[in-house]
Length: 114
Image (cartoon, rainbow, N blue to C red; front, side):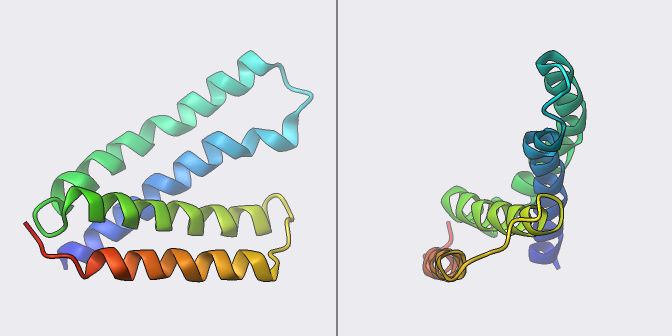
């Protein structure tokens, strides 16, 4: 259950962060200062999810395992965002990159816990 909780918190966290970092790309006509301000406001809830995810997950996972899992989730959330929001079509290289990322998660997950 704790693993699911950590993963869901990380998915939520990374969803906010992806929108904050890349959502403004469709609005290049907006002033940079307003893009920064809106992005910052969108990103604020990211910390409210990321910190508990790390707090709850640490012990069940090492910090390194948490970071690798977080990066895999981050890239997965971004791929969905890029496809649906930015209309970027994934390629075979994208698929291969994700396969390697999943391999990294599986590899790091096999490490001994603390």
